[in-house]
Image 1: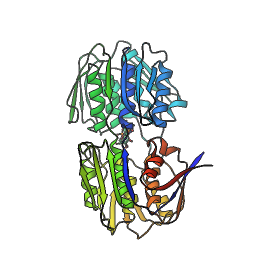
Image 2 (image 1 turned 30 degrees about the horizontal axis):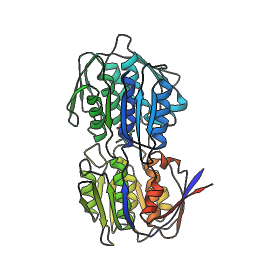
Image 3 (image 1 turned 90 degrees about the horizontal axis):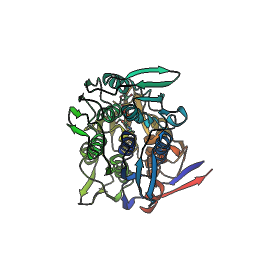
Length: 424
Ligand code: UD1
């Protein structure tokens, strides 16, 4: 077990190389289940989430060679010559909800998939009804027994028109992966437009899938009978980028994020500018800088892309807890994504909750405290708060942070933060 200890108050200066996207990597790794050919994937971040996912893929029959053991990212060659097992067991799925992303590809490739229901998590109940209804529209027979999803399509999947009742990133990914091997044409109406979905679609296209309309209100897929060998580089992690940009906002200073691109960050950058942070785009990076002592309050609502991402809501709230005025932050994606609020209050923040609205009245200073990480993004918001707080902050249950942030302690330390891991 570990905790993270931070002595706050130092502005950050330096450079950090942004990792490959976690949320792109997981579905893209899943694409290896769709073919018996090799799929080479570059830029996979070294995270506990990607590690668990590889463990799951390997249990299904994917052979994985790790040919680049560099610290930053992995180049992996995956090949599922044969699917040896159609079942994703509870033990693996409970470690990571994204395991549901093997459902569509397994079903499309073998006509059968058994995947444990992921269950709820700290940020909400997180149902998978849209995933299942979409697979049924493609001709699968789906039932739930003893906590497991049983999906079968012995004669293969058939293209159809699927209208999503609400936008879901995971259901879009599962349906897209399943439909590339379905017979005929599939239309996904009201899909997620997240950059990570476009990245997944581009990877599938590089494997020979026929997909149009990525990033629009309708994705059209013309099914193919098989996919071919391919190599693909996952996009940069826009949430990691936003997190380090907000670390600069809360501490002051200047950080260059190497590998970050303005593309896909527009709504975030608008918010960042409105709170008083400057940014400069170069051909290889974005530089973030806080000039003045004043942070301006904001009104922000989380929305599906291209809106402000829910995955940056907790980090923004930590910054707004020391802004010069009252911020209003509405969480529209998950029903319970305010687990960081009581912890920030322990550090001196003044935040009131009214349903899905957080009213954040900026205070002059936060104060270090003993706090507890509850989920991935909530945990990192506590790191940000600790970087700005007076005295020492100790964060427990930090394994949540390592699910999504590669080398975060080392990255922040090299920019001058007084942060360390402590074995307990
Ligand atoms: C993905 C991201 C997560 C991000 C989220 C929203 C990955 C691995 N995770 O999660 O980091 O916070 O998108 O941008 O990419 N819903 C249903 N029924 C369904 C599916 C979803 O009601 O079948 C609801 C969810 O409970 C939630 C909303 O739809 O309220 C959006 O969820 P979804 O977009 O599916 O999130 P994930 O794919 O789980």
